[in-house]
Length: 113
Length: 114
Image 1 (cartoon, each protein chain N blue to C red):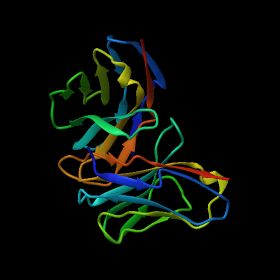
Image 2 (tube, each protein chain N blue to C red):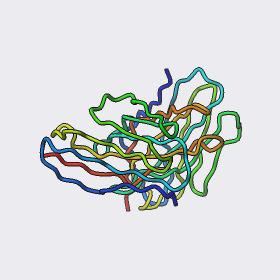
Image 3 (cartoon, rainbow over the protein chains, first blue to last red):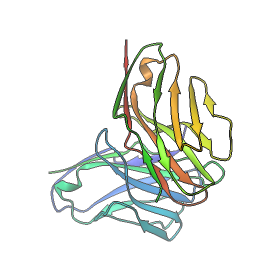
């Protein structure tokens, strides 16, 4: 069982609010990822990190930002939520070689009204 | 650029029967990994099986096995003795060895009929 956590699991919020989605892992993995996924659809990479103080944008353009101040913590922030941000956000971590396996959190379902 | 293609948006299988999910990929790399992930409805995505490209032997995990055809760039997943709990979205994924790059296919929804 992977030790990767996301909070909140569900969030309903009004337009214009600032939100932070939390992601933590206790496995000491350097690589961490954020994906956006509409229910039952494909995953889109929005951010990734190689380690502390390393963050990069992914393939899908996103208005969100991330930070990586500690190895175990990789929060995602939306400064001003909009209805177009409504989606599921999945966090994942990866130990790198030799396994290269993604360990996923349970996800956060975000609804912006 | 690397790509992963799953051409079957949806598959159905009778309980206790066998089903094969298809995946093709494209890469110019020689050292890489291939994966199948399972995402049950409203539940966490988990690894089903992984395959290192340098290994010729096909990976197996209990009822799950793969048919890895490196020259054809094909990586199919076979589920034997299908169970109701196998119903889920299945994602094929590719990873370059040692980089951040992790590419998922569009997924195949598997329905298991009782």
